[in-house]
Length: 240
Length: 240
Image 1 (cartoon, each protein chain N blue to C red):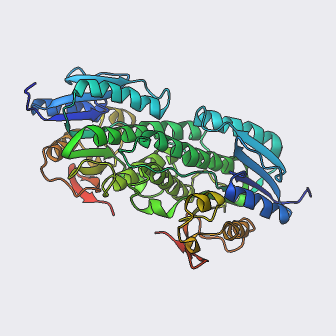
Image 2 (cartoon, chains in turn purple, brown; image 1 turned 45 degrees about the vertical axis):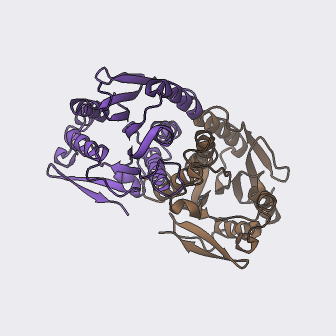
Image 3 (cartoon, each protein chain N blue to C red; image 1 turned 30 degrees about the vertical axis):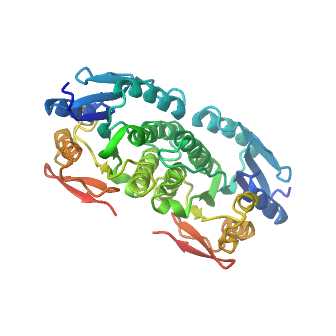
């Protein structure tokens, strides 16, 4: 790695979108650290693996922080992209309602809180932090209550972090991407008959987040940027 | 207790607001169950005590559910009022940011999810479920990030539960109260010089929730009802 290579942390770097991001940033000569749940990404310059959903948020953050501090050795990050998270459905009377609500909180809230903490401690001034929300959570989500709740939490977190005295480095940008459905192998497998022309390609998201990381076409800090895909074309629209 | 007495569960029944609610409903001849963290409320007809913030959400819900099922013995609830929760501040660079974020999730999200589950399983048709949000969380909350996040989560949960196929009993009402500051002994102790004429009295909230429970002046299901107090007078205003 060149001493001057810009640095990105990709939280969820072993997932479907995260892997595309790691590849993209590596191809652009960035230094890339991947944080993954139980999996590493061998294309990244270094990996931090956290222990799934075991333990507490405090323990998980301490685990990440101690490894990252050692890896960074006082150097600063240009970008932190949190694309960790998952999906689980269920209304309030679904058998797994409570279990899935807890899982969604861990997957989306925990990773977002830890990414925010990394930004507060290790991001350089003028850096960018991107979290992952969901268009669905802008309204009620009766068939996937835990998912909607957790994503609404992420949206409000972005609003908080974009304000003065939030603890973010000066001149930084905090934004969320709000996908509807992403074109991942898992979604292709489980929704083979869906209208895939409304799914957002991982390459589009990867290009977008690379631009923002590279300080190009960044949205206003605090933006909840909806990825609206129609007939294979994706446009951006900020949620109110 | 009369066989026909209406039944309410007050989640957080040993707290400042919860205690006033228990007293109020008992005076109105309701059957009252209190769910408290580590404390009982001796004025309630029965108590379920959950073990603080230990364990997981799934464990805590199972603990509540097994006790409540036994207590109710197939009878249904008229109202479930969740006024559990707490407050903790901190920006993303505050020493306790992660710890407080986790605590706020447990205090507000866990109790709200469990209350929702109780409603799905044990509330009668036409009953009411009230959760506690916060006016502050309608916008960013940079100085109390964990608190704002958790309350935004509760707001979206209410939106979900109010929709069709959410798992709520037919014709039920789900709403949140969104206080600014409540006139509690703790707030008087820690903010002795604040303008207390803008604080909402516990008696006002108690009277309001009693009316809703009694099927009087209920808001539309899904409402986030702001409690706006000026010069000692409180008015209600739905958030958009």
